[in-house]
Image (tube, rainbow, N blue to C red):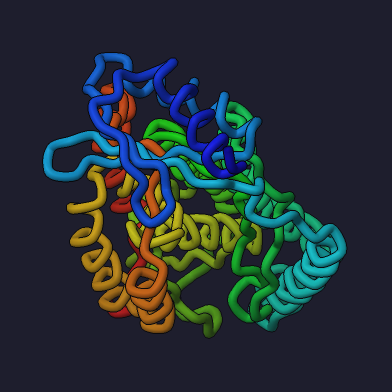
Length: 355
């Protein structure tokens, strides 16, 4: 008896331990099972995955023509390891660009006029720490959710950006093992923006308390569009009469603004963006495909044209594979949380450079 036949027999035996098999066939060399519906499908599939991954197999569950189809593939393990040296180099580069961004802000002519006795080094350090905290806590949220669900991920890769717009484009972590079901996909996708959003609120409050209320026309400054959440925080923690005064943002407040901007972009429901994971978990493959194009249009009409083009490219050529078990629905509490908080945070962080 050949080795491949032994593998198939072994796979079938494992599958039958967890499910009632209605039909079995080999499709293009892939063991394919039609299994009966069961109330605890999500739990049983998770147990099957845990059992099979130890033997180097990867089960995938889909529904076709009203039937539940289970396919089993060989899986040599992992989606590639992390590169510690690359992560370190990127972090150092990001630290440099953020530091220079802080210097450009603190040493500007506007601050020379408004606060000539300011402590430049201390304000730069404060800006760097706050911006790294917002970006780092966002990724920490992903890391914690991944750890809870035993999804292997890399360490964070910070992304340097132009100093003129803050010095960083955030950070990413690389997924090194598959997400099993929609619950896991939702948790891993939404945890980062939720914690990053919370961190941006705290940083913004601190930054607004450090910001300067100045008479209108005192200095020439660039006005930036602010999201609704930033307006709310200004009215609560730094109220002023905008007919008579302007608010010169402290660099720490600018770090909070960047946090909201990154959260807004990240929550767009497209491909491998965090919002893509959440949308895919909430709405399933069919509706996700339509919603993704809406996300691209929102980016485009908000002024983020390059990001919209990149998101469209990602959606068309990469899409979103979904979890291994794409049959079991998202849990009720996650559906409620997602349908309320997901759009709410997007609206609160919505930033448009056109309006």
